[in-house]
Image (cartoon, rainbow, N blue to C red; front, side, top):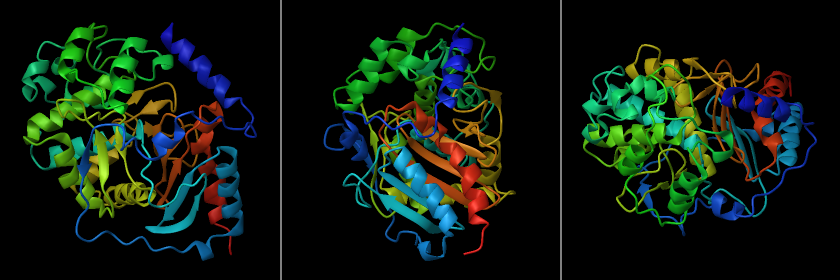
Length: 376
């Protein structure tokens, strides 16, 4: 069965020694620069004034630096930035990468899409998380996504069809090429809604079964677009990018119709990636606010899952197989935002590797948090 196969794969990955060397993707440089010279993108413009990110690396305990240096070297990382209490306490780059590069987030983009849905709810564009998506996206009526509620799809439980790990969240190799490869190359002309209707199999009742599916996240992007009357990238710019106080332009992959590839297509500078993490921690602390409550739910176990974690929230992995990691945003190949709420610590990690050892990256919090507690 699919679930048992996935479980066996990840058990095997967790058993790999931490000293295993990373294997670089052949197109890693394109990933690190966000494919911006190759794909069609819609930019999210920064505000006039960016949010300051003070640097206090000189006060970081040597034990903590060693933990992070070991992680950096083990994963052949290209960028590693750590913030605590809204201040950068560690920062390192390699392979010609620096602060001006715009690494692609791959499936970290899914978590950003969930944040955008949360803002649309709190801004009143989406009336209820329990509304069926067809209420807003009429063209998805009678599909699994249209009949499912917003909450169902946030939890990756539309029920549309089974996916396999080897297809990276797509239904088939054909869709992987027709969507993922095509949009990264700026050649995707198909309408997402047409593809969804064509491939819907109505395999499970909505909300019943977790199944990691890229089109669930695409449905959320279409939802935001329909509910707000703005393109997804425009609303993201207004609701999230301005909010974090970004310093540079972010960018979303878009197809020929201007529909955003919300499941894999966002790129930004390392400092803006860490600003996203800082914002999430700050907003989580506002427990009585609408967005704070949404984030509390989004980062809590909503459904049992397989893969990066045993539990899934709203397009966010919970626990991430580490005792000190509360939740993480994870992308294929070594893109992560990793959170420890109690200490207001967030890690931004960017690698472009096929090595399975990279999936153990969230476990670094188990070493880092005790190391940060040590005196200088």
